[in-house]
Image (cartoon, rainbow, N blue to C red; front, top):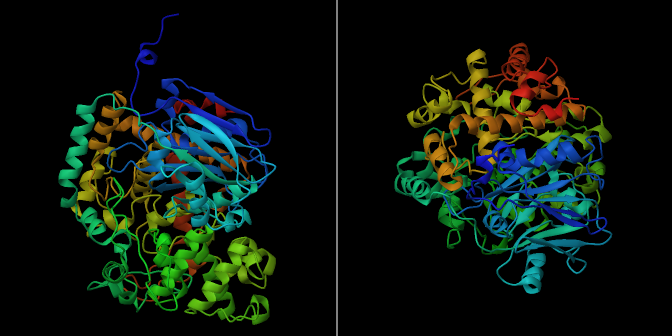
Length: 639
Protein backbone atom coordinates (compact mmCIF):
# COMPACT_ATOMS: atom_id res chain seq x y z
CA UNK A 1 0.00 0.00 0.00
CA UNK A 2 1.28 3.47 -0.90
CA UNK A 3 2.26 5.72 2.00
CA UNK A 4 -0.10 8.66 2.45
CA UNK A 5 1.81 11.80 1.47
CA UNK A 6 -0.43 13.86 3.74
CA UNK A 7 0.69 11.84 6.75
CA UNK A 8 4.34 12.41 5.80
CA UNK A 9 3.89 16.19 5.96
CA UNK A 10 4.86 17.62 9.35
CA UNK A 11 2.24 20.26 10.22
CA UNK A 12 2.73 23.15 12.60
CA UNK A 13 0.55 24.39 15.44
CA UNK A 14 0.08 21.31 17.60
CA UNK A 15 2.05 18.69 19.50
CA UNK A 16 0.64 15.39 18.17
CA UNK A 17 0.41 14.10 21.75
CA UNK A 18 -2.74 13.19 23.70
CA UNK A 19 -2.16 12.36 27.36
CA UNK A 20 -4.32 9.96 29.37
CA UNK A 21 -4.41 9.46 33.12
CA UNK A 22 -6.51 7.09 35.23
CA UNK A 23 -6.83 8.57 38.69
CA UNK A 24 -8.10 5.31 40.15
CA UNK A 25 -4.92 3.32 39.55
CA UNK A 26 -2.39 5.99 38.60
CA UNK A 27 -1.90 4.59 35.10
CA UNK A 28 -0.61 7.18 32.60
CA UNK A 29 -0.23 6.72 28.85
CA UNK A 30 0.15 8.72 25.65
CA UNK A 31 -0.90 8.47 22.04
CA UNK A 32 -0.13 10.27 18.82
CA UNK A 33 -3.16 10.23 16.50
CA UNK A 34 -2.72 10.64 12.76
CA UNK A 35 -2.66 14.03 11.10
CA UNK A 36 -5.86 13.02 9.31
CA UNK A 37 -7.51 12.51 12.70
CA UNK A 38 -6.46 16.00 13.83
CA UNK A 39 -7.70 17.53 10.60
CA UNK A 40 -11.04 15.76 10.96
CA UNK A 41 -11.78 16.75 14.57
CA UNK A 42 -9.80 19.98 14.94
CA UNK A 43 -9.83 20.15 18.73
CA UNK A 44 -11.94 21.44 21.60
CA UNK A 45 -15.36 19.86 21.97
CA UNK A 46 -15.08 17.90 18.75
CA UNK A 47 -11.84 16.23 19.85
CA UNK A 48 -13.20 15.58 23.34
CA UNK A 49 -16.49 14.12 22.09
CA UNK A 50 -14.51 11.53 20.11
CA UNK A 51 -13.11 10.08 23.35
CA UNK A 52 -16.27 10.48 25.41
CA UNK A 53 -18.48 8.73 22.85
CA UNK A 54 -16.00 5.89 22.42
CA UNK A 55 -14.93 5.29 26.01
CA UNK A 56 -17.59 6.47 28.44
CA UNK A 57 -20.92 4.81 29.33
CA UNK A 58 -23.29 7.61 28.35
CA UNK A 59 -25.86 6.76 31.03
CA UNK A 60 -23.34 6.97 33.88
CA UNK A 61 -23.89 9.41 36.74
CA UNK A 62 -22.00 12.61 35.94
CA UNK A 63 -20.49 12.58 39.44
CA UNK A 64 -19.34 8.97 39.27
CA UNK A 65 -15.79 7.80 38.47
CA UNK A 66 -17.06 6.58 35.09
CA UNK A 67 -17.40 10.13 33.81
CA UNK A 68 -14.46 11.28 31.72
CA UNK A 69 -13.26 14.89 31.83
CA UNK A 70 -11.03 16.25 29.08
CA UNK A 71 -8.89 19.37 28.86
CA UNK A 72 -8.35 20.14 25.18
CA UNK A 73 -6.55 22.55 22.93
CA UNK A 74 -6.84 22.45 19.12
CA UNK A 75 -4.73 22.45 15.99
CA UNK A 76 -4.35 26.24 16.43
CA UNK A 77 -5.55 26.94 19.99
CA UNK A 78 -3.23 28.51 22.54
CA UNK A 79 -0.76 29.88 20.03
CA UNK A 80 0.76 33.36 19.97
CA UNK A 81 -1.79 34.89 17.62
CA UNK A 82 -4.90 37.07 17.98
CA UNK A 83 -7.98 35.35 19.43
CA UNK A 84 -6.20 32.06 20.16
CA UNK A 85 -5.84 32.06 23.95
CA UNK A 86 -8.61 29.56 24.65
CA UNK A 87 -8.81 26.00 25.92
CA UNK A 88 -11.83 23.76 26.44
CA UNK A 89 -13.00 21.40 29.19
CA UNK A 90 -15.58 18.70 28.35
CA UNK A 91 -17.40 16.03 30.37
CA UNK A 92 -20.92 14.85 31.08
CA UNK A 93 -22.55 17.78 32.88
CA UNK A 94 -23.78 17.20 36.45
CA UNK A 95 -26.16 20.14 35.99
CA UNK A 96 -27.86 19.04 32.76
CA UNK A 97 -27.01 15.38 32.15
CA UNK A 98 -26.10 16.42 28.59
CA UNK A 99 -22.59 16.57 27.29
CA UNK A 100 -21.08 19.63 28.93
CA UNK A 101 -18.43 21.96 27.60
CA UNK A 102 -16.90 25.10 29.06
CA UNK A 103 -14.27 27.27 27.41
CA UNK A 104 -12.14 30.11 28.66
CA UNK A 105 -9.89 32.76 27.22
CA UNK A 106 -7.00 32.89 29.67
CA UNK A 107 -3.28 32.69 30.29
CA UNK A 108 -3.80 28.97 30.99
CA UNK A 109 -4.72 28.05 27.38
CA UNK A 110 -1.38 29.11 25.82
CA UNK A 111 0.52 27.48 28.71
CA UNK A 112 -1.41 24.23 28.24
CA UNK A 113 -0.51 24.16 24.53
CA UNK A 114 3.18 24.84 25.26
CA UNK A 115 3.32 22.10 27.92
CA UNK A 116 3.52 19.54 25.12
CA UNK A 117 0.03 18.04 25.11
CA UNK A 118 -2.91 18.76 22.81
CA UNK A 119 -5.39 17.20 25.23
CA UNK A 120 -5.54 15.55 28.64
CA UNK A 121 -8.09 12.75 29.08
CA UNK A 122 -8.86 12.03 32.75
CA UNK A 123 -10.55 8.84 33.99
CA UNK A 124 -11.55 7.40 37.36
CA UNK A 125 -11.30 8.85 40.85
CA UNK A 126 -8.30 9.38 43.07
CA UNK A 127 -8.43 7.85 46.54
CA UNK A 128 -7.14 11.12 48.00
CA UNK A 129 -7.05 14.80 46.98
CA UNK A 130 -4.69 15.12 44.01
CA UNK A 131 -3.54 17.46 41.30
CA UNK A 132 -2.09 16.78 37.88
CA UNK A 133 1.14 18.40 36.73
CA UNK A 134 2.02 18.54 33.03
CA UNK A 135 5.64 19.32 32.19
CA UNK A 136 7.65 18.63 29.04
CA UNK A 137 4.84 16.53 27.54
CA UNK A 138 4.69 14.32 30.62
CA UNK A 139 1.97 13.86 33.25
CA UNK A 140 2.63 13.57 36.97
CA UNK A 141 0.13 12.86 39.77
CA UNK A 142 0.67 14.79 42.99
CA UNK A 143 -0.86 15.00 46.46
CA UNK A 144 -3.28 17.93 46.98
CA UNK A 145 -4.25 17.17 50.59
CA UNK A 146 -2.75 20.42 51.85
CA UNK A 147 -4.96 22.55 49.60
CA UNK A 148 -8.19 20.57 49.75
CA UNK A 149 -10.71 22.88 51.40
CA UNK A 150 -8.79 26.04 50.49
CA UNK A 151 -9.96 28.91 48.31
CA UNK A 152 -8.75 29.31 44.75
CA UNK A 153 -6.07 31.98 45.39
CA UNK A 154 -4.72 30.13 48.44
CA UNK A 155 -4.45 26.97 46.37
CA UNK A 156 -2.78 28.82 43.51
CA UNK A 157 -0.17 30.28 45.92
CA UNK A 158 0.60 26.84 47.33
CA UNK A 159 1.11 25.41 43.86
CA UNK A 160 3.36 28.32 42.87
CA UNK A 161 5.49 27.56 45.92
CA UNK A 162 5.53 23.83 45.25
CA UNK A 163 6.10 23.83 41.48
CA UNK A 164 7.66 27.18 40.58
CA UNK A 165 6.49 30.67 39.75
CA UNK A 166 6.14 29.99 36.01
CA UNK A 167 3.28 27.54 36.32
CA UNK A 168 -0.33 28.10 35.30
CA UNK A 169 -3.30 26.56 37.09
CA UNK A 170 -6.86 25.38 36.56
CA UNK A 171 -8.29 25.03 40.07
CA UNK A 172 -11.61 24.18 41.68
CA UNK A 173 -12.71 26.04 44.75
CA UNK A 174 -14.77 24.85 47.68
CA UNK A 175 -17.88 24.71 45.47
CA UNK A 176 -16.28 22.09 43.24
CA UNK A 177 -15.16 20.06 46.24
CA UNK A 178 -18.70 20.18 47.64
CA UNK A 179 -20.08 19.03 44.25
CA UNK A 180 -22.15 22.15 43.62
CA UNK A 181 -23.73 21.27 40.29
CA UNK A 182 -22.78 24.61 38.73
CA UNK A 183 -19.23 24.77 40.10
CA UNK A 184 -16.69 26.30 37.74
CA UNK A 185 -12.98 25.83 37.08
CA UNK A 186 -10.88 28.93 37.74
CA UNK A 187 -7.81 29.50 35.58
CA UNK A 188 -4.88 31.45 37.03
CA UNK A 189 -7.27 32.96 39.63
CA UNK A 190 -8.81 35.50 37.23
CA UNK A 191 -10.29 33.53 34.34
CA UNK A 192 -13.02 30.92 34.39
CA UNK A 193 -14.48 27.89 32.66
CA UNK A 194 -17.94 28.83 33.89
CA UNK A 195 -20.79 26.77 32.64
CA UNK A 196 -22.20 23.21 32.91
CA UNK A 197 -20.72 22.43 36.34
CA UNK A 198 -17.43 20.84 35.31
CA UNK A 199 -15.80 21.98 38.56
CA UNK A 200 -18.05 19.47 40.31
CA UNK A 201 -16.79 16.72 37.98
CA UNK A 202 -13.24 17.50 39.09
CA UNK A 203 -14.42 17.51 42.70
CA UNK A 204 -16.07 14.12 42.28
CA UNK A 205 -12.69 12.77 41.16
CA UNK A 206 -10.81 14.31 44.12
CA UNK A 207 -8.96 16.39 41.53
CA UNK A 208 -8.16 19.84 42.91
CA UNK A 209 -6.19 21.23 39.99
CA UNK A 210 -4.48 20.77 36.66
CA UNK A 211 -1.11 22.52 36.68
CA UNK A 212 0.95 23.18 33.55
CA UNK A 213 4.58 24.14 33.25
CA UNK A 214 4.92 26.07 30.00
CA UNK A 215 7.56 25.22 27.45
CA UNK A 216 8.01 26.10 23.81
CA UNK A 217 4.96 26.58 21.64
CA UNK A 218 4.69 24.56 18.42
CA UNK A 219 6.05 26.39 15.40
CA UNK A 220 4.00 27.78 12.52
CA UNK A 221 4.36 25.72 9.34
CA UNK A 222 4.18 28.78 7.07
CA UNK A 223 5.05 31.84 9.20
CA UNK A 224 4.75 34.33 6.33
CA UNK A 225 1.14 33.34 5.58
CA UNK A 226 0.17 33.29 9.27
CA UNK A 227 1.90 36.57 10.05
CA UNK A 228 0.10 38.33 7.21
CA UNK A 229 -3.23 37.51 8.89
CA UNK A 230 -1.86 38.45 12.32
CA UNK A 231 -0.52 41.80 11.15
CA UNK A 232 -3.81 42.56 9.40
CA UNK A 233 -5.67 41.97 12.67
CA UNK A 234 -3.49 44.25 14.79
CA UNK A 235 -3.50 46.93 12.12
CA UNK A 236 -7.26 47.00 11.47
CA UNK A 237 -9.09 45.62 14.51
CA UNK A 238 -9.94 49.03 15.96
CA UNK A 239 -11.63 50.01 12.71
CA UNK A 240 -14.34 47.57 13.82
CA UNK A 241 -16.74 49.38 16.14
CA UNK A 242 -17.30 46.30 18.33
CA UNK A 243 -13.59 45.56 18.83
CA UNK A 244 -12.97 49.21 19.65
CA UNK A 245 -15.80 49.34 22.21
CA UNK A 246 -14.75 46.21 24.07
CA UNK A 247 -11.08 47.20 23.98
CA UNK A 248 -11.81 50.70 25.31
CA UNK A 249 -14.34 49.70 27.96
CA UNK A 250 -13.81 46.01 28.66
CA UNK A 251 -16.03 43.02 28.06
CA UNK A 252 -18.83 44.47 30.19
CA UNK A 253 -19.16 47.37 27.74
CA UNK A 254 -22.37 45.88 26.37
CA UNK A 255 -24.09 47.13 29.55
CA UNK A 256 -23.76 50.72 28.40
CA UNK A 257 -25.44 53.81 29.79
CA UNK A 258 -26.14 55.60 26.50
CA UNK A 259 -29.08 57.41 24.93
CA UNK A 260 -31.80 54.85 24.29
CA UNK A 261 -30.35 52.21 26.62
CA UNK A 262 -33.37 52.49 28.91
CA UNK A 263 -35.55 51.02 26.15
CA UNK A 264 -33.23 48.13 25.24
CA UNK A 265 -34.18 44.82 26.85
CA UNK A 266 -32.18 44.20 30.02
CA UNK A 267 -33.20 40.91 31.63
CA UNK A 268 -34.48 41.72 35.11
CA UNK A 269 -36.19 39.97 38.02
CA UNK A 270 -35.90 36.45 36.62
CA UNK A 271 -37.12 37.49 33.14
CA UNK A 272 -40.25 39.16 34.55
CA UNK A 273 -39.06 42.55 33.38
CA UNK A 274 -37.19 43.81 30.33
CA UNK A 275 -36.19 47.12 31.83
CA UNK A 276 -33.61 48.10 34.42
CA UNK A 277 -33.99 51.73 35.48
CA UNK A 278 -30.63 51.83 37.26
CA UNK A 279 -28.51 50.87 34.25
CA UNK A 280 -26.37 53.96 34.84
CA UNK A 281 -25.36 52.67 38.27
CA UNK A 282 -23.93 49.38 36.95
CA UNK A 283 -22.72 50.38 33.49
CA UNK A 284 -19.49 49.48 31.79
CA UNK A 285 -18.56 53.15 31.97
CA UNK A 286 -18.75 53.12 35.79
CA UNK A 287 -16.70 49.96 35.96
CA UNK A 288 -14.06 51.52 33.74
CA UNK A 289 -13.96 54.90 35.43
CA UNK A 290 -14.25 53.93 39.09
CA UNK A 291 -13.14 50.33 39.68
CA UNK A 292 -10.61 49.33 37.03
CA UNK A 293 -7.19 48.16 38.20
CA UNK A 294 -4.26 49.22 36.04
CA UNK A 295 -2.58 46.00 34.96
CA UNK A 296 -0.57 44.73 32.03
CA UNK A 297 -3.10 43.23 29.64
CA UNK A 298 -2.44 39.54 28.92
CA UNK A 299 -1.21 38.91 25.40
CA UNK A 300 -3.94 38.41 22.77
CA UNK A 301 -6.75 39.25 25.24
CA UNK A 302 -6.74 42.97 24.60
CA UNK A 303 -10.17 43.58 26.18
CA UNK A 304 -9.30 41.94 29.52
CA UNK A 305 -9.97 43.89 32.72
CA UNK A 306 -9.69 43.49 36.47
CA UNK A 307 -11.74 45.48 38.98
CA UNK A 308 -11.58 46.22 42.68
CA UNK A 309 -13.68 47.83 45.41
CA UNK A 310 -11.03 49.56 47.51
CA UNK A 311 -12.88 49.95 50.79
CA UNK A 312 -16.26 49.90 52.47
CA UNK A 313 -18.81 47.23 53.14
CA UNK A 314 -18.20 45.40 49.87
CA UNK A 315 -14.41 45.70 49.71
CA UNK A 316 -12.98 43.08 47.36
CA UNK A 317 -9.72 41.21 47.04
CA UNK A 318 -8.03 42.49 43.89
CA UNK A 319 -6.70 39.02 43.13
CA UNK A 320 -10.28 38.01 42.33
CA UNK A 321 -10.82 41.04 40.12
CA UNK A 322 -11.72 39.21 36.92
CA UNK A 323 -15.19 39.60 35.47
CA UNK A 324 -17.01 37.25 33.14
CA UNK A 325 -18.97 38.75 30.27
CA UNK A 326 -22.37 38.14 31.90
CA UNK A 327 -21.43 38.46 35.58
CA UNK A 328 -22.80 41.99 36.07
CA UNK A 329 -26.04 41.20 34.21
CA UNK A 330 -26.59 37.89 36.05
CA UNK A 331 -25.77 39.21 39.52
CA UNK A 332 -27.26 42.68 39.04
CA UNK A 333 -30.44 43.25 36.96
CA UNK A 334 -31.41 39.56 37.11
CA UNK A 335 -31.61 40.00 40.90
CA UNK A 336 -32.73 43.65 40.70
CA UNK A 337 -29.51 44.68 42.48
CA UNK A 338 -28.22 48.11 41.48
CA UNK A 339 -25.26 48.41 43.85
CA UNK A 340 -22.21 47.87 41.62
CA UNK A 341 -19.91 47.31 44.59
CA UNK A 342 -22.16 44.53 45.89
CA UNK A 343 -22.21 42.99 42.39
CA UNK A 344 -18.41 43.04 42.30
CA UNK A 345 -18.39 41.36 45.71
CA UNK A 346 -20.69 38.63 44.35
CA UNK A 347 -18.35 38.29 41.39
CA UNK A 348 -15.41 37.93 43.76
CA UNK A 349 -17.20 35.01 45.44
CA UNK A 350 -17.62 33.25 42.08
CA UNK A 351 -13.83 33.24 41.63
CA UNK A 352 -12.97 32.58 45.26
CA UNK A 353 -15.28 29.58 45.59
CA UNK A 354 -15.48 28.56 41.91
CA UNK A 355 -19.10 29.18 40.87
CA UNK A 356 -20.74 29.85 37.50
CA UNK A 357 -22.12 33.41 37.78
CA UNK A 358 -24.92 32.77 35.25
CA UNK A 359 -26.33 29.69 36.99
CA UNK A 360 -25.79 31.34 40.36
CA UNK A 361 -27.77 34.40 39.27
CA UNK A 362 -30.49 32.28 37.67
CA UNK A 363 -30.85 30.07 40.75
CA UNK A 364 -31.02 33.02 43.14
CA UNK A 365 -33.51 34.81 40.85
CA UNK A 366 -35.76 31.72 40.80
CA UNK A 367 -35.67 31.55 44.60
CA UNK A 368 -36.41 35.29 44.90
CA UNK A 369 -39.41 35.06 42.60
CA UNK A 370 -40.76 32.06 44.48
CA UNK A 371 -40.44 34.07 47.69
CA UNK A 372 -42.07 37.08 46.01
CA UNK A 373 -45.01 34.91 44.93
CA UNK A 374 -45.40 33.58 48.51
CA UNK A 375 -44.59 30.00 47.53
CA UNK A 376 -42.01 29.83 50.29
CA UNK A 377 -41.61 31.45 53.66
CA UNK A 378 -38.62 32.60 55.66
CA UNK A 379 -38.51 29.18 57.28
CA UNK A 380 -37.60 27.65 53.91
CA UNK A 381 -34.60 29.96 53.59
CA UNK A 382 -32.80 29.99 56.95
CA UNK A 383 -35.31 32.57 58.26
CA UNK A 384 -34.09 34.99 55.65
CA UNK A 385 -36.21 37.24 53.47
CA UNK A 386 -34.75 36.83 49.99
CA UNK A 387 -36.40 39.64 48.14
CA UNK A 388 -35.33 41.05 44.78
CA UNK A 389 -32.78 43.81 45.28
CA UNK A 390 -31.41 42.44 48.56
CA UNK A 391 -27.68 42.25 47.90
CA UNK A 392 -26.81 41.07 51.41
CA UNK A 393 -29.20 38.14 51.13
CA UNK A 394 -27.64 37.23 47.76
CA UNK A 395 -24.15 37.31 49.29
CA UNK A 396 -25.24 35.18 52.24
CA UNK A 397 -26.89 32.60 49.99
CA UNK A 398 -23.88 32.47 47.67
CA UNK A 399 -21.59 31.48 50.52
CA UNK A 400 -24.15 28.94 51.71
CA UNK A 401 -24.33 27.46 48.21
CA UNK A 402 -20.55 27.21 47.86
CA UNK A 403 -20.25 25.46 51.23
CA UNK A 404 -23.55 23.53 50.94
CA UNK A 405 -24.70 24.92 54.26
CA UNK A 406 -28.36 25.35 55.25
CA UNK A 407 -30.60 26.22 52.32
CA UNK A 408 -27.45 26.44 50.21
CA UNK A 409 -27.32 22.65 50.12
CA UNK A 410 -30.56 22.63 48.14
CA UNK A 411 -29.75 25.60 45.91
CA UNK A 412 -26.38 24.02 45.10
CA UNK A 413 -28.35 21.49 43.05
CA UNK A 414 -29.35 24.24 40.62
CA UNK A 415 -32.83 25.73 40.28
CA UNK A 416 -34.42 22.81 38.41
CA UNK A 417 -33.49 20.12 40.93
CA UNK A 418 -34.32 22.46 43.81
CA UNK A 419 -37.76 23.08 42.28
CA UNK A 420 -38.47 19.36 41.98
CA UNK A 421 -37.75 18.92 45.68
CA UNK A 422 -39.65 22.01 46.89
CA UNK A 423 -42.53 21.77 44.39
CA UNK A 424 -45.46 24.06 45.44
CA UNK A 425 -45.73 25.31 41.87
CA UNK A 426 -42.17 26.62 41.87
CA UNK A 427 -41.50 24.97 38.50
CA UNK A 428 -43.55 27.76 36.89
CA UNK A 429 -40.74 30.21 37.61
CA UNK A 430 -37.86 28.07 36.34
CA UNK A 431 -35.90 29.86 33.63
CA UNK A 432 -33.99 26.80 32.47
CA UNK A 433 -33.63 24.63 29.39
CA UNK A 434 -32.16 21.13 29.72
CA UNK A 435 -31.75 21.96 33.41
CA UNK A 436 -29.39 24.86 32.72
CA UNK A 437 -30.18 28.43 33.74
CA UNK A 438 -30.76 30.66 30.70
CA UNK A 439 -28.23 33.48 30.16
CA UNK A 440 -29.29 37.10 30.80
CA UNK A 441 -29.97 37.83 27.12
CA UNK A 442 -33.65 38.18 26.26
CA UNK A 443 -34.94 35.65 23.66
CA UNK A 444 -38.46 37.01 23.10
CA UNK A 445 -37.23 39.73 20.76
CA UNK A 446 -34.37 37.57 19.40
CA UNK A 447 -36.19 34.59 17.96
CA UNK A 448 -33.12 33.07 16.32
CA UNK A 449 -31.31 33.19 19.65
CA UNK A 450 -34.40 31.62 21.24
CA UNK A 451 -34.24 28.68 18.83
CA UNK A 452 -30.49 28.33 19.35
CA UNK A 453 -31.00 28.36 23.15
CA UNK A 454 -33.37 25.43 22.78
CA UNK A 455 -31.49 23.24 20.30
CA UNK A 456 -28.01 24.03 21.63
CA UNK A 457 -26.58 20.68 22.75
CA UNK A 458 -24.86 22.00 25.90
CA UNK A 459 -28.01 23.87 26.89
CA UNK A 460 -28.72 27.59 26.46
CA UNK A 461 -25.62 29.68 25.88
CA UNK A 462 -25.38 33.37 24.99
CA UNK A 463 -22.64 32.73 22.43
CA UNK A 464 -24.28 29.82 20.62
CA UNK A 465 -24.87 32.19 17.66
CA UNK A 466 -24.49 35.87 16.86
CA UNK A 467 -27.65 37.64 18.07
CA UNK A 468 -30.58 38.59 15.83
CA UNK A 469 -30.21 42.37 15.94
CA UNK A 470 -26.90 42.15 14.14
CA UNK A 471 -28.62 40.73 11.03
CA UNK A 472 -31.63 42.99 11.20
CA UNK A 473 -32.14 45.99 8.91
CA UNK A 474 -30.64 48.09 11.73
CA UNK A 475 -27.55 45.92 12.24
CA UNK A 476 -23.98 46.92 11.50
CA UNK A 477 -23.00 46.52 7.85
CA UNK A 478 -19.72 44.76 8.60
CA UNK A 479 -21.52 41.87 10.32
CA UNK A 480 -23.47 40.81 7.26
CA UNK A 481 -20.46 41.49 5.04
CA UNK A 482 -18.32 39.18 7.18
CA UNK A 483 -20.99 36.46 7.07
CA UNK A 484 -21.32 36.10 3.32
CA UNK A 485 -18.33 33.74 3.10
CA UNK A 486 -20.27 31.03 4.95
CA UNK A 487 -23.60 31.54 3.22
CA UNK A 488 -25.45 34.42 4.92
CA UNK A 489 -26.50 36.78 2.14
CA UNK A 490 -29.46 38.81 3.40
CA UNK A 491 -30.87 40.57 6.43
CA UNK A 492 -33.68 39.13 8.53
CA UNK A 493 -36.13 40.82 10.94
CA UNK A 494 -35.34 40.23 14.61
CA UNK A 495 -38.75 38.97 15.68
CA UNK A 496 -39.80 36.85 12.67
CA UNK A 497 -39.23 33.11 13.10
CA UNK A 498 -39.49 31.69 9.59
CA UNK A 499 -37.50 29.45 7.27
CA UNK A 500 -34.95 32.16 6.52
CA UNK A 501 -34.31 32.66 10.23
CA UNK A 502 -33.92 28.91 10.82
CA UNK A 503 -31.38 28.74 7.98
CA UNK A 504 -29.54 31.64 9.62
CA UNK A 505 -29.42 29.73 12.91
CA UNK A 506 -28.11 26.59 11.17
CA UNK A 507 -25.28 28.45 9.42
CA UNK A 508 -24.34 30.52 12.46
CA UNK A 509 -24.43 27.48 14.73
CA UNK A 510 -22.00 25.64 12.46
CA UNK A 511 -19.67 28.61 12.13
CA UNK A 512 -19.73 30.18 15.57
CA UNK A 513 -20.28 27.64 18.32
CA UNK A 514 -19.56 24.68 16.08
CA UNK A 515 -16.37 25.46 14.17
CA UNK A 516 -14.80 28.40 15.97
CA UNK A 517 -15.31 26.78 19.36
CA UNK A 518 -13.88 23.46 18.19
CA UNK A 519 -10.84 25.23 16.78
CA UNK A 520 -10.83 27.41 19.94
CA UNK A 521 -10.98 30.86 18.42
CA UNK A 522 -12.02 33.62 20.81
CA UNK A 523 -15.45 34.76 19.62
CA UNK A 524 -14.65 38.28 20.87
CA UNK A 525 -12.03 38.68 18.18
CA UNK A 526 -13.60 36.93 15.20
CA UNK A 527 -16.28 37.66 12.61
CA UNK A 528 -19.15 38.08 12.26
CA UNK A 529 -19.33 40.89 14.84
CA UNK A 530 -15.62 41.38 15.56
CA UNK A 531 -12.83 42.09 13.14
CA UNK A 532 -11.09 38.94 11.87
CA UNK A 533 -13.09 37.94 8.76
CA UNK A 534 -13.58 34.29 7.68
CA UNK A 535 -10.98 34.54 4.91
CA UNK A 536 -8.37 35.68 7.46
CA UNK A 537 -9.39 32.87 9.84
CA UNK A 538 -8.86 30.46 6.97
CA UNK A 539 -5.50 32.08 6.14
CA UNK A 540 -4.33 31.93 9.76
CA UNK A 541 -5.14 28.21 10.00
CA UNK A 542 -3.34 27.57 6.71
CA UNK A 543 -0.27 29.46 7.86
CA UNK A 544 -0.14 27.69 11.22
CA UNK A 545 -0.76 24.13 10.03
CA UNK A 546 0.56 24.25 6.47
CA UNK A 547 -2.66 22.58 5.31
CA UNK A 548 -4.81 23.88 2.44
CA UNK A 549 -7.63 24.59 4.85
CA UNK A 550 -10.90 26.09 3.56
CA UNK A 551 -13.99 27.74 5.00
CA UNK A 552 -15.94 24.68 3.87
CA UNK A 553 -13.69 22.45 5.96
CA UNK A 554 -13.99 24.79 8.94
CA UNK A 555 -17.79 24.47 8.72
CA UNK A 556 -17.55 20.67 8.52
CA UNK A 557 -15.61 20.58 11.79
CA UNK A 558 -18.38 22.65 13.36
CA UNK A 559 -21.06 20.35 12.02
CA UNK A 560 -19.20 17.30 13.37
CA UNK A 561 -19.07 18.81 16.86
CA UNK A 562 -22.78 19.55 16.83
CA UNK A 563 -23.66 16.08 15.49
CA UNK A 564 -21.50 14.25 18.04
CA UNK A 565 -22.93 16.28 20.91
CA UNK A 566 -26.43 15.57 19.59
CA UNK A 567 -25.76 11.83 19.44
CA UNK A 568 -24.56 11.91 23.05
CA UNK A 569 -27.66 13.76 24.25
CA UNK A 570 -30.14 11.58 22.39
CA UNK A 571 -28.45 8.44 23.71
CA UNK A 572 -28.59 10.02 27.18
CA UNK A 573 -32.39 10.21 26.84
CA UNK A 574 -33.03 13.79 25.74
CA UNK A 575 -35.84 14.35 23.24
CA UNK A 576 -37.45 17.15 21.28
CA UNK A 577 -39.41 18.27 24.33
CA UNK A 578 -36.09 19.21 25.95
CA UNK A 579 -35.50 21.74 23.16
CA UNK A 580 -38.40 23.98 24.28
CA UNK A 581 -37.95 27.06 26.43
CA UNK A 582 -39.84 27.97 29.62
CA UNK A 583 -43.55 28.75 29.37
CA UNK A 584 -42.95 32.42 30.28
CA UNK A 585 -41.42 33.13 26.89
CA UNK A 586 -44.54 31.96 25.04
CA UNK A 587 -47.20 33.37 27.38
CA UNK A 588 -45.79 36.58 28.86
CA UNK A 589 -44.96 39.33 26.33
CA UNK A 590 -42.18 41.77 27.13
CA UNK A 591 -43.87 44.32 29.39
CA UNK A 592 -41.98 47.46 28.40
CA UNK A 593 -39.28 49.08 26.33
CA UNK A 594 -38.44 49.13 22.64
CA UNK A 595 -39.80 45.59 22.11
CA UNK A 596 -42.88 45.87 24.30
CA UNK A 597 -45.31 43.07 23.46
CA UNK A 598 -42.71 40.74 21.91
CA UNK A 599 -43.41 37.07 22.66
CA UNK A 600 -42.49 33.73 21.17
CA UNK A 601 -45.15 31.92 19.13
CA UNK A 602 -45.24 28.35 20.46
CA UNK A 603 -46.50 26.77 17.23
CA UNK A 604 -43.94 28.58 15.09
CA UNK A 605 -41.21 27.62 17.53
CA UNK A 606 -42.28 23.98 17.29
CA UNK A 607 -42.20 24.18 13.49
CA UNK A 608 -38.79 25.85 13.63
CA UNK A 609 -37.34 22.98 15.66
CA UNK A 610 -38.61 20.50 13.05
CA UNK A 611 -37.12 22.59 10.25
CA UNK A 612 -33.82 22.93 12.11
CA UNK A 613 -33.65 19.13 12.46
CA UNK A 614 -34.45 18.64 8.78
CA UNK A 615 -31.87 21.18 7.59
CA UNK A 616 -29.24 19.28 9.58
CA UNK A 617 -30.45 15.94 8.16
CA UNK A 618 -31.57 14.72 11.57
CA UNK A 619 -34.67 12.57 12.02
CA UNK A 620 -37.93 13.78 13.60
CA UNK A 621 -36.56 12.96 17.06
CA UNK A 622 -33.42 15.03 16.51
CA UNK A 623 -31.04 12.11 15.96
CA UNK A 624 -28.53 12.53 13.10
CA UNK A 625 -29.45 10.18 10.28
CA UNK A 626 -27.25 7.35 9.07
CA UNK A 627 -26.63 9.28 5.87
CA UNK A 628 -25.51 12.40 7.74
CA UNK A 629 -23.16 10.43 9.97
CA UNK A 630 -21.56 8.85 6.89
CA UNK A 631 -21.22 12.26 5.27
CA UNK A 632 -19.46 13.64 8.36
CA UNK A 633 -17.17 10.58 8.65
CA UNK A 634 -18.91 9.68 11.89
CA UNK A 635 -20.23 6.31 10.73
CA UNK A 636 -18.54 4.74 13.78
CA UNK A 637 -21.47 6.25 15.73
CA UNK A 638 -24.04 4.16 13.85
CA UNK A 639 -25.37 1.41 16.10
